[in-house]
Length: 363
Image 1 (cartoon, rainbow, N blue to C red):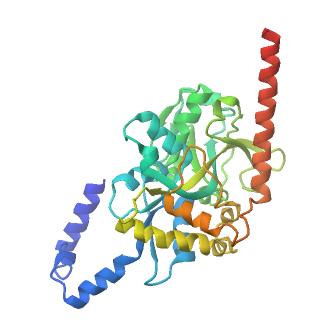
Image 2: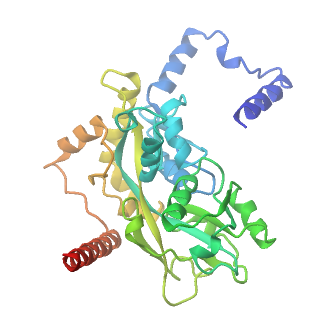
Image 3: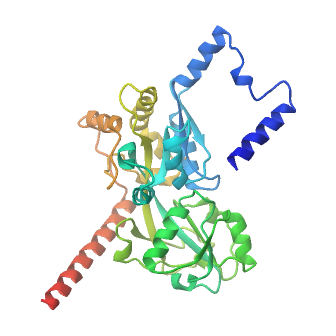
């Protein structure tokens, strides 16, 4: 797909002789060289996600909130999604920062395909806590009903292609996975070709906000258990979240997973580290700007000082936070997020209590 896109661009350029593919490689005047250096000096690329996803909105809003002309320019990059973003961070030129869910790094670790990935990929701060959405047709009432059924995980490389298989495996359910764009997949659901779609993203998720209700189509509840406790938190989807898709009454249980603002671990003295240092200064110093009403509401939930289990904070971000201690108010966690973690903590304590009783009974 990438090769085809590049070839298409060059073919189109060949039809426009004034703009050949090699235009950027033409000899530059001294003034142009100075301009090129100026443009690149303080530019960073942020891999977001698909057009309809939450990640690309966050990448765009980073640019909207932090861009400062020649001092800092942020380029939001439409990518193949959170899973592929880690791959892009490792290998794709121009990607300095990426947004990804925390379970993605675990998947890379377990695969063993990338050596020392936990040292090579770090994080600047936690980001939104996103939800897992399993949206099915009238015949599907539980996750077990998807056994052997065709389930779309969206386009390959997206976060759902990581989270979906992990969750189904833990639940002991074995669907037939396909990789279809969500908009197309929903049409296939109407035709009976697909039983459900799996998607990820932070509330309000644009895909479901804009989705027209169909008779019998609904979110499939996911029952939380200790099988899911290593990566995920329990959280509800309510009528208030999606009033046209969820009726008034009890919420639909699903899973939440934290995401991070990930970065390659560039060492001191590296030119990319120099630019990241500027971004990190702006990000922490001007973070309150991202909480304004015109930005995604989940920015208000982000605690930039929170530690992310299983991840290492990038050394520049660690130094910046240390420098901020005592000079600024401590970051606060929003009431909604506090309630979510209290709920998780309560579940964990109850699990420990039950395990203790079970152990005592055996003895």
